Image (tube, rainbow, N blue to C red):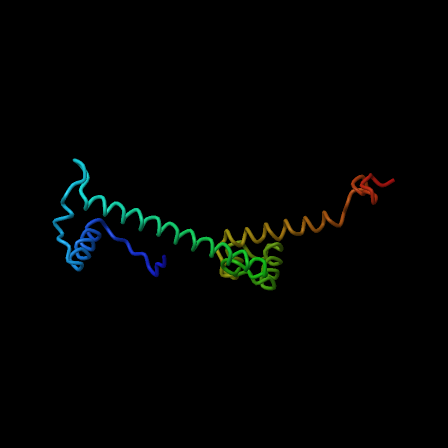
Length: 156
C-alpha cells in the first residue's frame, strides 16, 4: 500500500467520505444507520475499521521513515560526515583569546564577546582545552610502576 501523504482526519471527515463513497456507488446511505446485533451500527463499525487501518498505516510509515533516517545517519557517520550543527569554534582565534584570558588581560565575559559565543560556551571550551592538555601531559608521563613488558607484566 502506498501513502504519499497521511493527513489528519477526524471522525466526522471519515463519515462524510464514507457517505460520499456509498452515494457514488449508488448505495443508500441509510444502510449506515442499521445496527449489527443490538449495539453496533454499520457506520461505527466501518469508521472503526478505517480508523484502525489509517492508524496502522501511519505507524508503519513513521517507523519506515525513522528506519531510513537512522540508516542515513549511520551511513554519514561511517563516511566521517559531521552530524549536527557545526561548531562556531575557531581554534586559532580561541587560542589567542585563551592566552589573553589566562594571562588575566581579559575577563571571561570579554573573551566570550570577542569569540561571539555565550559566556558558558567559552568556559566549557576553556575546560575542554585544559582537560585535553592534562590528558596529553598524563600520556607523556607514565609512572614506572605502570610500564609493562610485552607480556603485560610490570617491567623490571
